[in-house]
Image 1: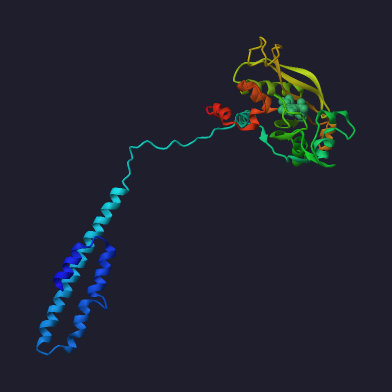
Image 2: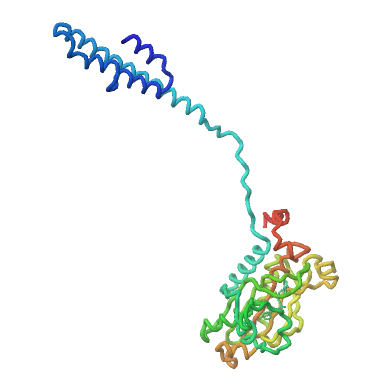
Length: 337
Ligand code: FA5
């Protein structure tokens, strides 16, 4: 039995098989256990001899099994180490890296420039009431200026805001008559415009508003000229042209000398040398009064620009729709922006 067991132990190759062998020889119903149980039938003289022999075999088998178990475990560990070997010199898998959208890049630059000049960034809702979007901005129901901004209405009183100007009124109301008010507000706006290379039905604007004592048109021009030079990173000419907005009086549009051709004429500026980048003006007294500011004591200026068109100009992009179609080939060109 001893020899047979020893050679079986020698020949097993898995821990599973070894466990079966242990049960077969040493288990409750095992062969050696059966011999030890049978001792009661053996004559008293033979009992000590057979008993000690059986015990000797048992401890021998226990040792053999333990030794084999050690060996098998070591081998299994070595196999695993061999299989799971990691080659740290292999080249890694390339991981796709995203980049900031050119439109967001421009909005962030605009924010940084104005924050640097002491402005705070305000926010307002994209779903707006007719009264904030129009009435509080001196655009009554039957005013022809409503046609300037064809709107998406949700109910007769609620619409998607057509410009960021309602945030002027909301910001003044939040300040409850205190000065200075000095905010910009970037955000999405919506108009029922037909999409083409320079028009989108959803686009972005950045509004600006300053209200304090003694604010004049010269402050407006100074701040906006400084802003334009910082944004395009070069010396620029700027000019203010008379314009009309119901919520500012007087109203202007600001042109910059074309950054693409340096003022000599190109496709971007239609050979005029000038490009319009924003609308602005002195806040209309009626808008100040409506938001709780005494228009005899305080004056202010406001402006509104379209970062989409500024981004077209800054990066020489030919179609505004590129910003919204998410073609990776287009977006990848701005990884260093
Ligand atoms: C306004 O929306 C005024 N609220 C701006 C303003 C604010 C004037 C404060 C005075 C004081 P306007 O409709 O011109 O103005 O739009 C401003 C800018 O938005 C334009 O210069 C243009 O850059 C951009 N814009 C207008 N319509 C579109 C469009 N469909 N797609 C992309 N950009 C547009």
